[in-house]
Length: 355
Image (cartoon, helix red, strand yellow):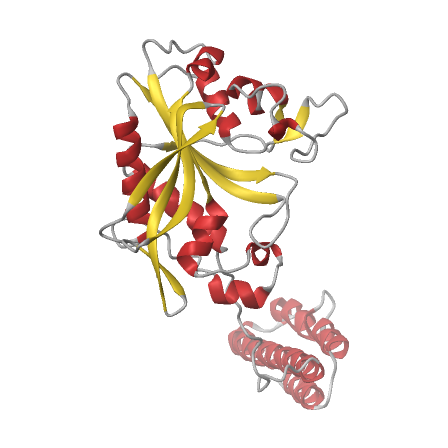
């Protein structure tokens, strides 16, 4: 027992001193390694007289457990000290104010497209899309636009090649052509998207947004067109009554053609849509020209339909009181923060479109 006590006392004293991990591991090796002091004592058990062997083995196990516990505690102590030392060097001042969280806003144009899509989905229209870069046939010829029509001139259209076969679409009507060429009637679609024309001022931009609608079926007439547009205007501007008038006009792709005005009044410097005594042009429309139907292999004697086109930017300006179209494209965060919409607030007809 005297040898065991000597080993115990010697190493307990060492473990009480200041040590690093390498020194502790060395002590562990000296005690419990292959030829360590404690390991050697276990090898002697067989040589101890039988009457003392049990007590020797018991004392040896107690000392072994005590020293192992002390070594583990010392290792934990040293490791924690190193961690705390690192933390002190890498200390983060949690008293500093947090960075402000800025939530993005939905652009009024995107919001208006969502609102219009929601309105038309309620009456059975589907949303179709097409490429911004179009060919001349889909953009002009298939839509019954004459070769000498002013819209084909370079000062109105952005052409992408010298032969004038590729261009940036001037309206979303080519989406209607693509849809009718790939499917069979009936058709009931809207086509919102970007369009391009060589024009720029307070109320016009070289890139703007339109939504065009198309309804082709048997026995469709102007009455269906009027009912559809009446529903759209009332739902979009959230009014119970609306004054509308159809003025005769001309578009190559519709016959008869009309421009639609809605009644409004000025109140406290704001435009109030409804039943005022003043008129505001809002969109163009008409019955699809038979030549357009023939160009997409639809029999005009069997199927008829109406089409309309609306400037999305203009609708957004009227509804949300935005005076300058150019502000839509200025990328001014302050403007967007004022006129923008919560991204989690999706418009539906069941709980209102505007906030």
